[in-house]
Amino acid sequence: MKKIIFLITIMMFCKCQAFELDTSVDDEIRRNYNPSAIEQSLPALPKVTPTNTTTTQAPPKTQPVTQPAKPQIVVKKLPTSQIDKSTAIRIPKGTKFKVRSSAYLSDSTRVGARLSFTTLQPVTKRYITIPAGTVFNAVVTNSHPPQASGNGGLLEIAVDGMRYNGKTYYSQGKVTKANHKKIFVNNIKGKRQYWKNVGKQIDKGQKFYKKTRRVSNNLTDNPITLIVAPVPTIVGMGAYAVNLVGSPIIAIPAKGGRLSIPAGSEFEIKLQEDIYLEY
Image 1 (tube, one colour):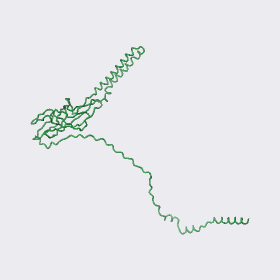
Image 2 (cartoon, helix red, strand yellow):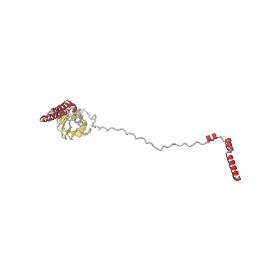
Image 3 (cartoon, helix red, strand yellow):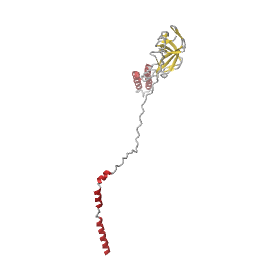
Image 4 (cartoon, rainbow, N blue to C red):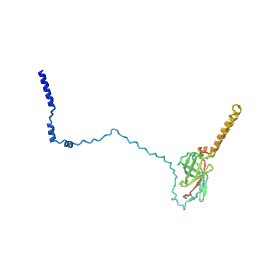
């Protein structure tokens, strides 16, 4: 029993002593060192560049939309200043030549296509005769297929050269006849079919009206359908009136005729400028 009491007394004594901390070391550090100065004397931390793990890809730049280049029309204009006009032979403007085409032509012939025509008969002027078989060169300057409102196909040709005695001379000319038909302002055109399309619309209304009349006549043969017999005729008259009045508007989207000229067709070329030939 005495031993137990003795042990308890020792343990309590040690516990009391444990709460008495020795602060002498802390006081010594405070006297010799300034804690705020220590923080200021510490080296600065290295700067770390932040890395972005997710890379953003710039959106692709939109490519500019380029319009398709228009075909270049090459009109060959040969120099005439090198020719001495005082001694040259002049073929006056307004001179006409009957020629034959060497290729098939249509409203689908591409712009810029080169053409050639051959004269069919000689043309005599002062001091000179242009023999048959002389070649004129030309270029297609405009063409398009049939268009709405009844417009037909179109082909425009410009003459830009004449070959004589082995030399090609610049000559500006236009086509005045194609297949024995007169050409105005150098536009070879397909048939304009606007009024023809107007007539077609009127004919459609008239045919529909005739069908309704026949239906009404058949209904009158039966006593049961006799009452409704006039109805088809009334409907037909209404449709006929609509087509008759609205045909000028209904015919607008309709296109004109195609233009097709076979190879070997006859044309007439008229000079628009004088040609000077070396003698």
